[in-house]
Length: 368
Image 1 (cartoon, rainbow, N blue to C red):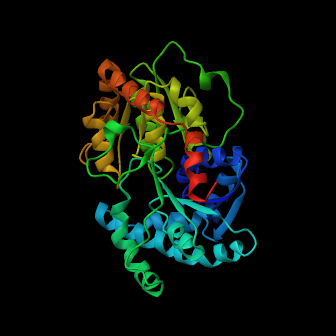
Image 2: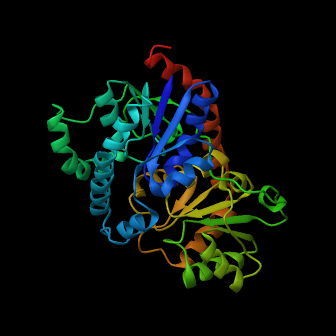
């Protein structure tokens, strides 16, 4: 069997599909993973063959992010249009690839519209794997503005439904009315580095990790946040791009900052502070760690559901200052109920079928 994975346009979607793709490959099947230029190193970093479907680089992505509308609805519509444009532009190179390496099944996620389009062109089954707990339908209105002419040419009134849908979210956080899906355990994955003892070992103080990338926590704001959290008597670890990390280390040598594999670090943490990113959220859930979510963009519904479940705190738009985040960390560290509820979610995740258990269902779609 040949399986083509088209998880999406960011490193996070690559990482969240890596476990299933690797399981399919370990079962003896051929696996390719496609992506834009920006994410090709991330695909190869998780040990998979990478197929270039678009020349879009990091600079292009950052330029788009900088010009996005600030309101959530406008941001979702703009993102949907871009996702659809990438899907349409990527069809040509994917169809050319299929002349030499024809997939028997295409695996995508709800935000990558190229997967069902390619599967329809080739007449092969498609699998949709949710990459986080997000509701991708918020992107569809913008995407359909781009996809409508393509769907009309194919004689379709909407995107084809997947032959198999896989959900990685804990059952208790699954919204009512969600489409039926096969459950699968979320297994964190990310590029690795040589680990150091402090990454996987716990010291004598609570540990708070701050992550979110250079577009969220940086400069004076990051320094104020790290300084405020450190004043709580905890160890502060900041996962950030090297230019951001280097500046912080210069100002606060006692803070560990840099590229850190989150799947290694997360189980040692007492709190993870982040911006509502799906991969970070799911890694924290799998590790049983309470979360503090600040500056969430289009993920506020899912992050609020986690907070209402008692496994974290989501700060509203008017409480985004470093001192607000510090106060949220204080609450999470001093109230053991958050940790208990986070560990219950981790147990839910662990009880779901592992990715290897889903390989047989994919094999059945293509006839063995």
